[in-house]
Amino acid sequence: GEKGLLIFSAHIGNWELLPQYAALRLDTPLHIISRETTNPLLEEKIVRPLRERFGVEVFHKKNALMRILKVIKKGEYAGFQIDQKLKPRGGGIMIDFFGHKAPTLASPALLQVRFGVVVLPVFMVKPKKGKHLLVIREPITWKDNGKSMEEQIIELTYIHQKVIEEIILEYPEQWFWMHNRWGLKEKR
Image (cartoon, rainbow, N blue to C red):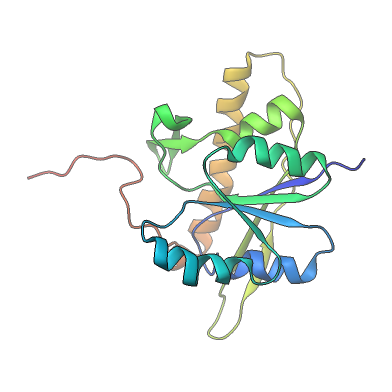
C-alpha cells in the first residue's frame, strides 16, 4: 500500500490549530504526538478534547515511535513538533541550532533513514491579524549515503532543524518557546 507521511512542525504561530485544520481538510487519518500536560484534569477536560475534536488521534510520547511507524505503514499521517529540548538519554542528539549546540529530537531522522519515511515540514502562522497561513515546505527525502546510520541521522536532523530555523527567522515574533533550548547556564 501507499506509505504515509511524517509531518513536523514547531511551536510557532498557531500550532494547536494546525492539526485541527489538517484533519478537516484531509481524507487520511492524522495522529499527533504530544507531551501529556502535568495536570491530569486539564489534560482530560480541555487539552485532549480540543486536540481530538476533529478526529485527530493523540499519542503521548511513551512508545510513540512504534505507533508512528505503524500508522505510516498503514498509509496514514503522523505529526509532531521538533523544536523541543531533549535529554540525550531521551533519544536526543546535539545539533547546531542558531549557532549553538542544542539537545535535539532525532526520531524523525531515524524514521527516515531506517524506514524511508518521507517528511513534510508544515506550519500555521499568522501573517496579519485575524488571518492564518498554512506554510508547507518541500518534502524532505533521504537516500542512504553510505555513511553509518548514526552519521546519517545527525546530518538529517541538522537539515530538519535548519527548516525550523528558517521559519523562525521569517516569523520570529511567533516562535513560542520559553524553556532553555540550549541548556545554557545562567550567569550570576
